[in-house]
Length: 141
Ligand code: FES
Image (tube, rainbow, N blue to C red):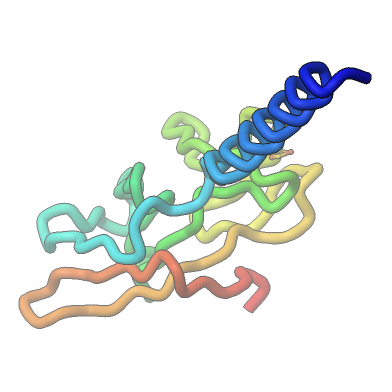
């Protein structure tokens, strides 16, 4: 191998390694919340029987079930696709493999086996809510 060929090969290898590093740095989890906290104003909090409040950037659905206010992480517990609210069926559905969850995040149809995770909700003075998207607990209780 000539010096010129060796240098060209080394440059190509270095360039490829740099591209791999950039690619790894750019990979993000699109189902992860984009923000650590979301403030929900009193007028946005749905009644117990209403459609849930949805935060796209916080990746959660929130509603008041009458006994407590729940913020459910919108990530399916099967393989992490984002779920959606189906008003006609009054449940959450996952578009990937069809798992279904009720209003409190319990599984009503698999393949998911675990309920949706819950985010910590803090009640602020004046009735607004602060959802801490980075504080989550299992919906198992
Ligand atoms: S990822 Fe939701 S059912 Fe598979």
